[in-house]
Amino acid sequence: MRAVIQRVSKAKVSVKAKIIGQIGSGLLVFIAIHKDDDQKDIDYLVNKIANLRIFADGDEYFQKSVLDLNKEILIISQFTLYGECKKGRRPDFFQASSPKLAKNLYNAFVDKFKETGLKVAEGEFRAMMDVELTNEGPVTLILDS
Image (cartoon, rainbow, N blue to C red; front, top):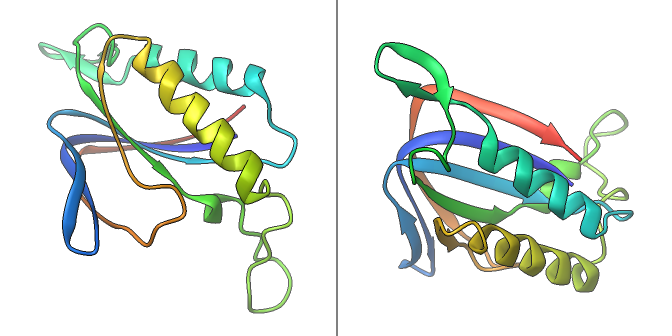
């Protein structure tokens, strides 16, 4: 799994001009499923993201996690994170999972995050989405399982 995590003051996702998920202060997580991923990848990334100390505590930067501060999470499926662009002019997506397997693992990832007790919003798997965000910091990190 590959995740791009952005610390945001707000974010929302829309499909066909209808807002389907939005959060206030927290994390926007773009997640891609690799063809070899399984439950251990979900467990690792959810634990890592939930406990990353990337929020301020007073004047101290990078002291608190999304869990520590009871922030919110918006999760968006984005298979293009596995786009390989070294050859040619069109990316290939051979490392990305098949849509059927990816959907099951994406749903399991969202469900695992909901177990943390945090407010979790999500996009729509395989939909054309518009994502709006206010990146706070900016803080953007990339994680691989």
